[in-house]
Image (tube, rainbow, N blue to C red):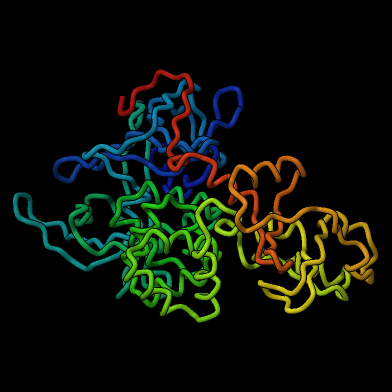
Length: 433
């Protein structure tokens, strides 16, 4: 704090709630918008990028911020809900400034050029409200010295004035993604996907490269098709194949189906044979049929398994809630395509019976399974009629092929651009006012 004016590091703003004067939450902070200025003048903070509950991102001018305290932002309550669009003169602090490689500069004689010093990595920047004004500026930069400047190879960390660094031009190379990822590490895959979707292609590729294969696979499943293809195309082929293996087979099949034939075959060849076989099997079915929508990895149990066995499988944290909602009982083999499909057991039923109960005695064998050729309207009608979140897909021989989940149905029933849908709400604030 300088002169009684609070200083706030932007990493502490990421994800915090935004409230109107009545205490109602309107969204969460996803980034800070700043404008670089001529010479050594600190950048002016224009406002915040706020994500509404609809995942729509809007611009909240700092003139509409009445307070930033106790992990929350208070606004005047008057918002313009037009979608945020970054202007050429604007910079996203979290998305474009963190992890940059910049140079410390030495103060020189007035009128003489300043000498450049050590290259450092930007870990954070702080913003401060100007005294007696509503304007905000970026005033300090938190940097780390060292060869990489990353958390893995820690060097000396220090906070310097904005005027003590050079290198924030976006045309310069050398921006990593560690600090940005640390800022958003608690985000769900769908929310991190939304962050990536709003980054520049260059920054999106940097962040994707820094994610683990498993995390990137989860995020890719939530991205629009164009972003998926763009990111996959910038990965080395071996890594792209590894990421595809981590994806749900149905999502991997959908993504590969959009690639040129040569690229698709090359990636399938690089994948583990068992994973590639599942994907190839799904790609053989038509789009928007139960066969094309299903996952080949539902929970499958033998008739002599117990309720305890079933609950142990349901507890797997890697399963989606829809797949964990029920188990499927089949004769061996246990993996799809199975032996004869015998029936389904819903999670709630598992909770009502003793752990030693055999699953064959409590299964629901009256529910008609879906055919792999069932079309999307039929599948949707099935879910609506029986209040299901997942449904078995069984072939003519009675073998379980997989399961369709409600999220797969919704993804294919919504418009292709549903993530970009406009939501018309009232408001009268202009971006950049």
